[in-house]
Amino acid sequence: MKSYLVGGAVRDALLGLPVKDRDWVVVGATPQQMLDAGYQQVGRDFPVFLHPQSREEYALARTERKSGAGYTGFTCYAAPDVTLEADLLRRDLTVNALAQDADGAIIDPLRRTERSPSAPAAPCLSPAFSEDPLRVLRVARFAARYAHLGFRIAEETQALMAAMVEAGELAHLTPERVWKETESALTTRNPQVFFQTLRDCQALKVLFPEIDALYGVPAPAKWHPEIDTGLHTLMTVTMAAMLSPDVDVRFATLCHDLGKGLTPKALWPRHHGHGPAGVKLVEQLCARLRVPNDIRDLAKLVAEYHDLIHTLPILQPKTLVKLFDSIDAWRKPQRVQQIALTSEADVRGRTGFEAAITRRGACCWRPGKWRSRSPLKRSWRRALKGRKFARS
Image (cartoon, rainbow, N blue to C red; front, side, top):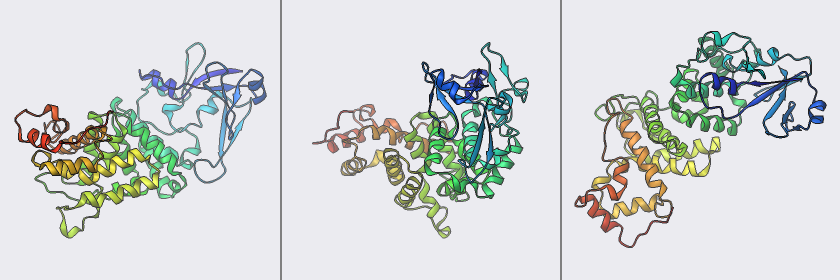
């Protein structure tokens, strides 16, 4: 019985990245032997055990065979005769088909590390890749997570992903799994890569039709030199990721212009009223994916009020109070900063405006930053009479 560190822990160590979770594969053991050694079994579909001291996961080496639809439709075979190489070759990507033994030696059956750990990610030899729709999202998430290292998706992998989408495999994904992968992608350095990857394989129109509908929708060139609203959306997500690590802010930025997808073509490139119109689309998207309420609520507010926020310096006191009432800023003051960051991402997420310093950004929402004699500060003082923020 031998144990090997496998998958992401080995991959990230080779890439010089922090290792968060460590998973192990055990070769040559039976479930009873694991139980006798003090391990606790936790896997229902295949033998996975928790180490009695570290509580890390130890899985028996296994192979898989497709037996049904979707990402749960697999029958696994776990026995002492399953080799480490057989276990590694069932994995989704070559970048994950790595192991390390107790002496620190790397086991690399596909000789990936002889090239580069961040080389294009081709699928492993397992035929199960094209039968597990979750892997479309996982590949997109990997692309986002490792984009800064030059990670690229091999053409073969892209073709497989597109074929899976065309075959309707994504219909078998549960909302919870789609959101889990999306939320994880939103925490990466380059979350926009996740959505671009999904669009490249036609998965965006299946999983996020509200976002896909923005492509080909023009905006006035005076304000949006990039013209295309879909392109602008991903540019704002790129900027939001630079401004804040907050998933709430990044998701709200992603959804801020959904209403433009409803504008009749006869009115293009103008989009009057697209903010309030987008609220229903945000609700629709969040209900479908079962997005947490706090994330949904911020996205709805940003969609509805982002245009008004751009006029903040010239708003009348009563309008300021009404705006703060609408976003519930008195009880939830953190929303002020969150909405300010989405506003800044919106302004700077345009071709030629990436380095812009805008009065509509975060500083505009912090009264203490305003010049003492500015009209905005005077208006703010009048607006705040009788109002108190809750302590956060």
